[in-house]
Amino acid sequence: MSLSEYPEVAQLLISTLAAGLILAGLFFLFVAALGVLRLPDVFNRAHAVSLTDSLGALFLLSGLALYQGFSTNLVRIVIVMILLCLLNPVIAHATVRSAMRSGVEAWTREDS
Amino acid sequence: MNEFFLVVLISITLLIGAYLYRVLRGPTVFDRVLGLNGISTKAIILLVVIGTVFNRVEVFVDIATGYALVNLLGSLAIAKFLEKRGECVDVAE
Image 1 (cartoon, rainbow over the protein chains, first blue to last red):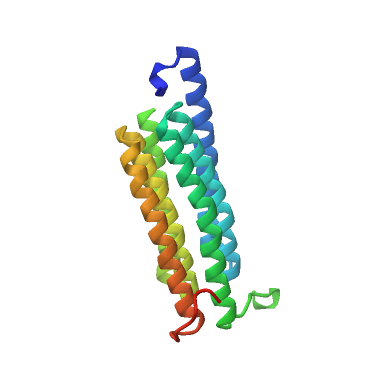
Image 2: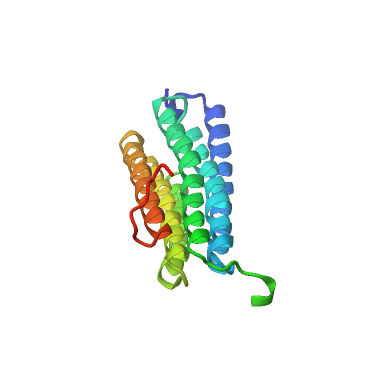
């Protein structure tokens, strides 16, 4: 049952809700990009990439999933959300651990 | 609603530029790996949005799933390689 088979009012409501979720996701993605550009060292940037990026992606994908209506496509997008939720922290952790162990100096206030 | 999705597509594509800057300029190699990770997350989102625009979500979502898994493998391999600077290392460690 895709979105176009819903009654008119429900369509409008779901579309508005999906657009709001997508805009929230875009906001978080924008903040993540700002963090990647502006933060001082690799640990701070990992913070921006893993946390904010995952949140933004989850918001955006949930908006898209809502827009699909009650169908199999919704389940597929939810699977991608779960994958992102699992994989993003793992990758960030592995990268930061390798940075830590190969001796990257953390940024301190005196460096600025 | 289609124009809205096009705007979303264009803005995510512009956001990739920030990560590309970090990949090109990053002082350490780990900055570059993080930037690549961010770009691949954006690529996954872009694939799903493109699928919504063309009304073929089921195809594009499958590609996105595969891309996410390949991205995990590549990033883990690079991280493990850099951790010991090219020496062979047990992944299960």
